[in-house]
Image 1 (cartoon, rainbow, N blue to C red):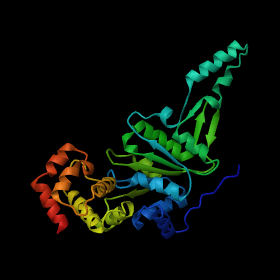
Image 2: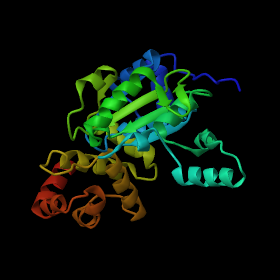
Image 3: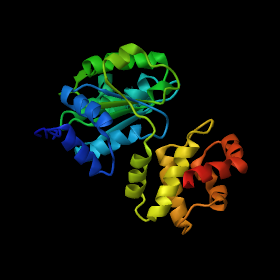
Length: 298
């Protein structure tokens, strides 16, 4: 089967247009690192607070470039067997017993690729035989430093060695996007292999554009009030500020409630969509919420 090449946008402006076609608003400060990562075939390391759109970059990029998205969600205790591959041992044992019953002794048959469980990193390498995928390594800061060390080696060679099968190499590097919420420092050696970009919370104008694009049924006045309130709320001392995803969920909820303006009552009723920590919700209610709303509507 012939390999289908990726159609990388010819310029930063073209990349912004392609992402905008997927309803992702990428300002030049983000579009340039994404473009350079594509052109230089280097991993892209995106860092920022939760909910600012880091994971979404990988999703819309895969869609815009018409290629597969392969996601590795990191967590504490993640190891090679969950990230790269492991053998289906019960099925291997069954195969061995069937071979023995038939009178054969060729147990090597039980190590065939048929019994290999392919995890995201191996799948990303194999996918390059047809078309380089987008490999999303999400929230690397949640993984242990040992896995970070393995990932450093993987990104150097883009190959996986399986003793029973040999070394499997990528035809060319996949498009790698690594995200971090900065819950811990990621080693500089990993960052040095990447094109780095910090994604901040959006400005008022950008967030308003996102809301009107993603929740088109929201009245213009309500969309502006929602955006202004969230922007003001982020200046408060909270355990977890609302991200863009929470803004969009809140906007959709208010539209579902047939609201066309923002007031204290509806905010009180729907704070659980905007904030995900009970202490934050309690701290915002009452006079503090009235002050934030007054500033937002001013």
